[in-house]
Length: 298
Image (tube, rainbow, N blue to C red; front, side, top):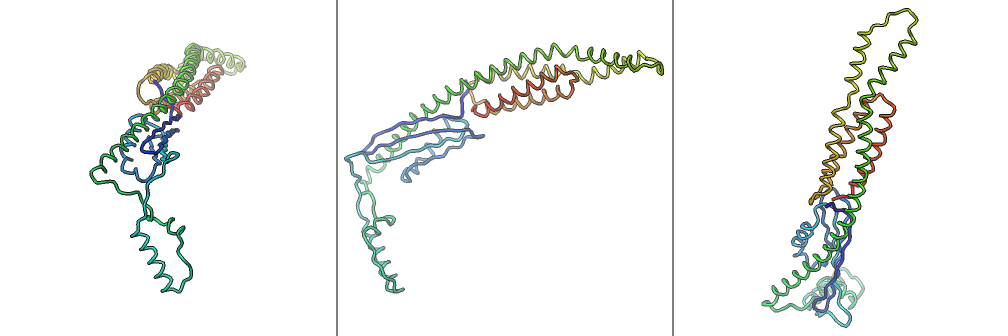
C-alpha cells in the first residue's frame, strides 16, 4: 500500500485539571524529520515521543504540536519563590545605590521575571509516579493523533497510486505502439533513401546495391531500440509491484522514473521516424506527470 507524505491528525486528553491537545501534520521531505513543539517541562519525553512518531512515519517532515491548558474552573497551584524575589529586590537596590538610578521595582515587574513563580513541589515518593503518568498520557494522545495522520496519508496514497497506475497503463500503450513501429523504421528509411537516390541519379554515377545495403545495415544497427523497449517493459512491471508494496517506496519509484526517462531519451536520439518521435514526446510528458505525483509518495 502506498502512503502520501501529506496528512493531519489530532487528539485531546484531560488530566489533573488540564486539557492536552495534540496536533500532528506532515508534508513532503526527502528524509524523516520530526519537529516537536511542547512545553519545556516535558523535554525529558522528547526522545521517546520522537521514536513513537518514527514508528508510524518513515518519510516526510512531521510537525508535532502539544498544548497544555488549565480547564475552566481550575486554577493552577503556584507559589512565590521568596528566595528569588529577595535576590531581585536586593539587586535592584544595589543598582540604584551604585549607579544613582531612579525607579522602583513593581509587583508587575517581579512577576515577569524568571523563577519568581513556581509550582509547589510534590513529595519525593510521588514525583516519579507523577512523571510516569504524564509520560504515558503523552504517548496515548500522540498515538491517537498519529492514527488519524496515517489514515489520511493512506487514503491520499491510494489516490496517488491509482493515478500513477493509470498513467503506467498509458505508457504501456505507447510502448506497444513503439514496439510495433520499430521494425518499420528501417524499411521506411530504405524506401526513402532509394527514392532519393533515384531522383538524384542523372547518369553521372552507377547505383551500387552492395554499398546501398551496407548503408541500410549501418542505419538499422544505429537505430535499433529493442534493448530500450525491453528495459522499459521491465521498469513498468517493477513500478506496479512497488505501488502494492507494504513499505516506503517513493525513492525507489523516483529512481525507476529516472531510468525510464533515460531509456526514452535514448529512443528519441536513435529514432529517425516522425511517428516514433511523437510517441517519445507523449511518453516523456506522462513520465513527468508521474514524477510530480511520486514527490508526494512516502
